[in-house]
Length: 138
Picture: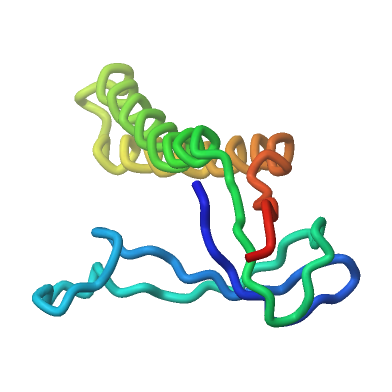
């Protein structure tokens, strides 16, 4: 995925820049009344490998494969673990147990908390793959 960013400042080998996030359909058109098309700015820092200067526009690259896998990890894995925990709770807990549904819910919520810590440890191991890289100065 290629993005364009404008450098606001450079300090300690990092370029602090503004990147315009693309809308859902790619661009805002005059006939569209949806707010999904609006471009919003994000402020990020990127290693200044190209020795770009303040005010320069640069192309940034992030691996599409990594982005799609990250989306799967962040949304898919907790959902699957949550549904499995709810299903196991329904199967394993006896029907006669008072407040059974509450215990099943607590088991599902606990699975989400466990998923959070697992994803956090995975992110520490693979965090460098997510780094934006400057490709060229425009």
